[in-house]
Amino acid sequence: MREVATAVVVIASVLVASGCASSGKKPATSVRPTTLGGGPAPGIGLTRNHEVQVARSSNLRLFSIFPAVPGERRCAIPEGGSSPSHIPGTCQTSVHPRPTMEPSVSVTFGERWRRPICAPALAVRCLHPWRRHIWRIIEGETIVTPAAKLRIYATRSSGATAPQDYK
Image (tube, rainbow, N blue to C red; front, side, top):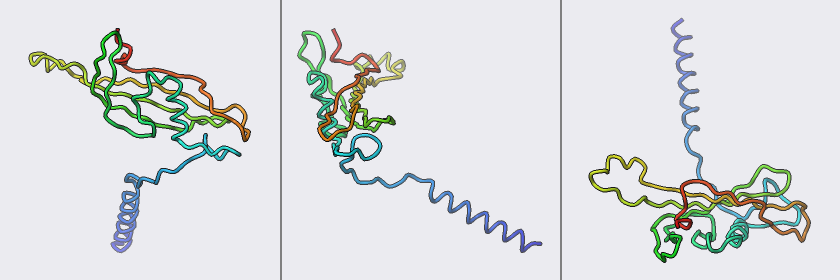
């Protein structure tokens, strides 16, 4: 009877150990050019850099501060209104395929900046010192042909009021 119990404990230990070993974060894969959308599209071999270029060109005034390739970097976010001042922040660009029948991607431009510094006496009340704003540009093609071009379908904006929109 003890031998059966020991065997059960050993088998359970092996199963637990093998399950824990594979539950960690997967190693990063290399970045490579992909076709637009979820699968290969005949005649189209657009890279993520091209998709970002199309999204940035939709509004150069807003999107010129963001990285031209997917990634994140420090940036100077321009304040709106008549003031030529800038707010230090972080700008990020990302590209994600969309689950649609036609080839389609979502290009996201995000910016993050620190709120104006709180007075020392009010520091306890500054629970959320960072602000974030996101623009999501939806790109795609309606018909896949060798001469098909990306087109912007929608631009959505969310988050705190962007410094560019300050009055």
